[in-house]
Length: 248
Image (cartoon, rainbow, N blue to C red):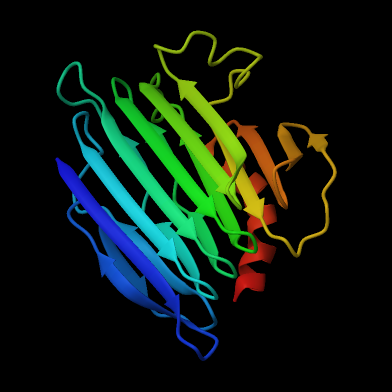
């Protein structure tokens, strides 16, 4: 299955945001939900199971100057096996212009047994843009070994590299569960925050949560591992909630 979706947000000139374009195809259906404040909220609604091996899904997001968008999904994405020898692919491309803000806050990606999935994200931020970008991976459903999943994230700020991050789990990734990667934890995630107005952070490590300021821009990256999806989300939500309040 192939599907393409596109979201374009623009400032409305009255301190709010309007969606100039919102379209999608099954299983990438986009729905705006009611809400107040400056930001608009959009949910990605899965119109079919999956992604299944062989699926090719693409989402483009364009946030104009002064606009603000939150993007959520209604449920976790469960990557499932499909045709032998092929992978499923989810590609997200986002551009945020000066003064724009994007909160990308989907539910978790679950790498079900036997899957072969590639998630690729590329974000281009103008100087003065703000971003909250969360990625979470759950290694298998309850009681099963995970399939193969690769998550690539690439973020540029003001035309310069800010983040290049890649995670691979599953039987095709030697050592992924070892102490150098997940240390046996079945859940892992990261939260990237880019905001020129925030004070400089210092690097810290508390248990399985690390906070790392990035050299390429006004940005901080949190990474965490956890024994389950609920605990992982709790680790990252501590940082997300104040930012959501600010953007509104």
